Image 1 (tube, rainbow, N blue to C red):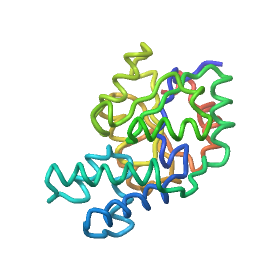
Image 2: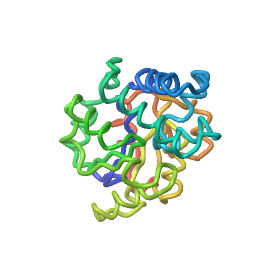
Image 3: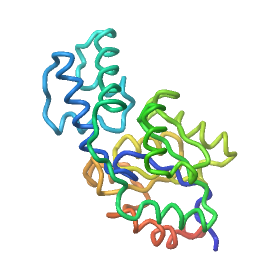
Image 4: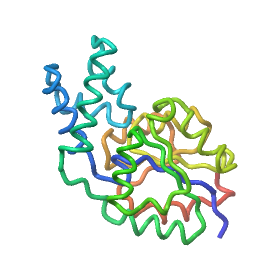
Length: 223
């Protein structure tokens, strides 16, 4: 089978894992620990996908650098240690990854999570073996800066036109745009599909199990 892409790069939260509530709870808990204003669920949710520093600065633009660090530290504590909100994979995610691996696709992860957080969920979900490489916001610039994707493509010697970025936020779509790759939006995550379509992805899917069939429609000659 001719594949339209050689490399598929997944966002994690809201794309492979239904972690919205856990992240939301930890953002709120960090705000409480730091005596910061409790914002609305929509305001907290809107920064999911950014690196933690960038998310904190967006939520609390008046914070000093010390306050940003303190808030970030409290978020990490709640996410890595204290919070036990269940964060399941989206139904069918593991089967989809196995199917794509069987068809010869290379796969990677580009996420706003920190390295500790990503390693935690890769271990919990037992998905780590599917990905050739991963990049986190704690290691590169945060989305939508293109560095994450650029480093992944450089490491795997894959060109932008051979790469598909899949995600649920504007930051994922803009990341792909900035890195010169293709993108596919998912409608079941944090940002509304209308927001994502503004970045002209190749298409969108409403559930993760739709991905293999969508890829089958994308022959090299159609791009």
